Length: 129
Image (cartoon, rainbow, N blue to C red; front, side, top):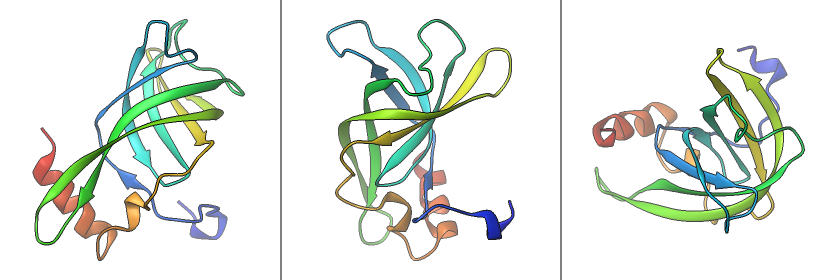
């Protein structure tokens, strides 16, 4: 990626963990897989079906984010965040990548917890099932 076109204000934490979402949390929830997260938004993949969110839609997502402590310790912090879908891209004929901007930011910057992005990726590799 060309860094001169980079518009992100903070580093994102890339990891693969379930995310549950719905327009109305009182209805059936759909499942996706987290791709990356920052304090202000996230990207996840989901099935390219009638439950896939669309651009401009408001939804609520429930997900967990690794919070790293000293050494190799970590906890999973769970969140429910409402937000607006700002982009939907086709990955292939079965999957779409959905980007959501949160209405309320997370209380920390997930991608900036480690000394470097490669340090965070090494820690995540150790916890990924």
